[in-house]
Amino acid sequence: GAVVSQHPSRVICKSGTSVKIECRSLDFQATTMFWYRQFPKKSLMLMATSNEGSKATYEQGVEKDKFLINHASLTLSTLTVTSAHPEDSSFYICSARGERGHGYTFGSGTRLTVV
Amino acid sequence: AQSVTQLGSHVSVSEGALVLLRCNYSSSVPPYLFWYVQYPNQGLQLLLKYTSAATLVKGINGFEAEFKKSETSFHLTKPSAHMRDAAEYFCAVTLGGGATNKLIFGTGTLLAVQP
Image (cartoon, rainbow over all chains, first blue to last red; front, side, top):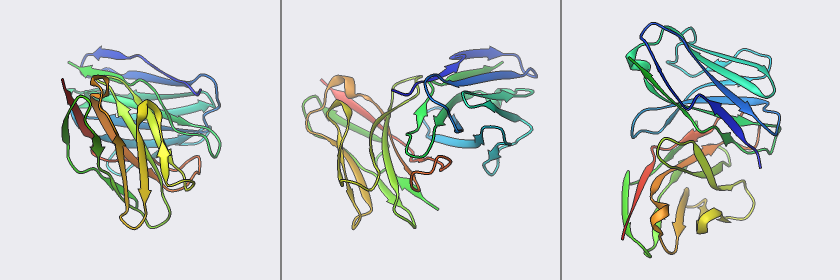
């Protein structure tokens, strides 16, 4: 079945630094990648949608300069949290989708803690 | 815009009892509906999905859901709960099978299974 690998699973960084999270589709070409943020005991909030080779589409209220998304190839998308602050601490999950009819496959998530 | 509402943020059942997790949707066009399960600090695993074919959908781990257009519902059921079913469950909706269609989640239901 379709597999999406997300790394790192956990990261702790200092306030003001940047953190990159990778999401790779291992056995299919991910035409579209979705990035979600999940607060403790809360649902998943869609942050942005990215298509390979084009700029990401951000949801309302999500700072595009804060959360940089790159989808340079059909198997890799990255989310970079720039100048991280404690309020950026959260669980980030990616989801990848291939051509029409392919389901949504989720990564295992990244727990970001900013200290 | 489409949305889903999950009634009951917490549901507790005894082992062996019926599991019923409620989900109602709102969509201006025929939706695709999904149920996902999430274990602590992990990504999401697809339980089942409705994509306009059979209204009664059978998924993994003994779960099933029925699409009822008249009630705009897609409730998740399992005849007999097992301890390993304790987890967070999310209902989600999207508009059709397009690769770029966003998946919108409900607020989740935490299922507890008592011995």
